[in-house]
Length: 61
Image (cartoon, rainbow, N blue to C red; front, side, top):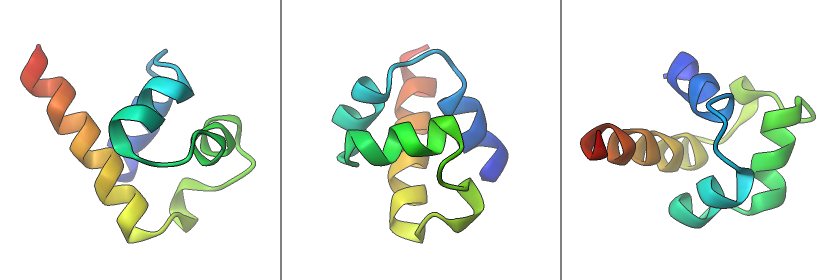
């Protein structure tokens, strides 16, 4: 799960688009993207929301 989330955050998508789709605050997404927050320390709720974004993007392709 951690690897998939890392790939999403490095995929080139904007923090805004991930935040909009996931419901997570854009500032929180930016902090995960730039390393101010560690992915290993994110809440389960946040991780589940990001996994949902990943699954939605897989269905679109």
